[in-house]
Amino acid sequence: MKTIDPGQFRQVMGQYPTGVVVVCASVPGANPAALTIGSFSSVSLDPPLIAFYPDKSSSSWPQIREQKRFSVNVLSDDQEDLCRKFARKGVDKFDGVQWSPAESGSPLITGAAAWIDCELYDVQELGDHYLVVGRVVDMGSVPNQLPLLFFRGGYGKFSPSSLAVAEASLAGLLPAVDAVRPELEHVAQECDSECVLVARVHDEFVVLASAGTDTSPRLATRVGRRLPFVAPLGAPLAAWSTPTDADRWVQAGGRKDAETLENWRHELTAIRERGYVVGYGEKPYDTLETTISTRSVVRLDDDLADALIDVQESMLNPPEIRDDEHYDVRSLSVPIFANDGRVLQIGLYGLSTSMSGALLRDNIARLLAAGERCTRALGGTVPQRSASTHVTADEEVS
Image (cartoon, rainbow, N blue to C red):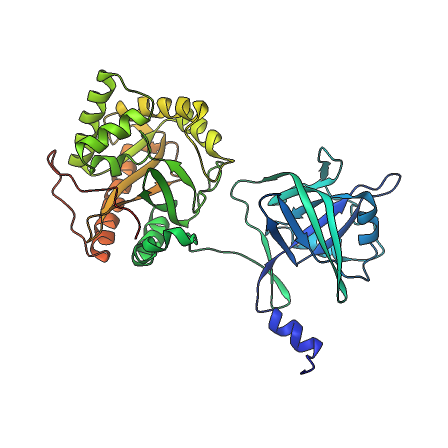
């Protein structure tokens, strides 16, 4: 067997970027123990397990092991100095560091991008390291906070121009993602916001890709997030579906009375005529975002149904856009059309919550133009904007 040189090993493995975590434990009668780790990963969803690999020579690991519980703090991209501090030996690593205790008592470092509170599950010896497995008891993350990266022996930041879904079940949509990705990046930069590509997959509304950054305090859009395809989610998709399917979309949102159904029919006609949807209002969207913020797959429960009804009310009563007035704009979306008849949707998020009518019109024009370019990239045709236009939005993924 060929002997692998340690220096070459480090150099080759340095081509694989990793995040940086600090594993911490509270020690009775002493300062908390901590060690910096680059080799960290998820292991299992059921039960929820994570793993990391401390060096056998670590003086901090025996202290952490003895406590049988620990926290994993994913350092953010502005915590490089903190990372170096925790990597030092023979010093009080928590001197001047702000932290708060988890319910278990383990330290949660202020400003970390994410934290995971664990109980010790298993320890195995592997070469000159230990394999440590922890069972997750609690966890959380900070909206829009990017992680610190370790790459080629140094620290850096992640600057995504765009992200695309990696789910195997959505592979049939990846050619469309690749085709429109440059346009997502362009319009996100042009409108200084986040641009998202979504599609209907069966009875779900799925985020396929995103570009740009939402600087608002809400949770960053999760690529791969699934929401139920019910009113008002995916209104541009519903507007170009069949009338029967559009009625089902309305009724699935919890409003089955004749008046609401007729109001939505009128609004979907208006959406087809103008070609876009604007989401207005702070309270309805804040409630919706809070409801879905901790879920990757969202089921239609009572909390979500209530939040959706509030958003429906604002969408069914849109204000007239006047250039000299200001509007609280939460989203702006348009449909795009593929050559196989499928309808997808691109949308802007993180727009100004006090936007002039003139700027809103400008952003609408930019997004409509981007939508037309996306449609051309997909080999599709933008249908004539009229009440009689219907294009299927419920094609299954092949």
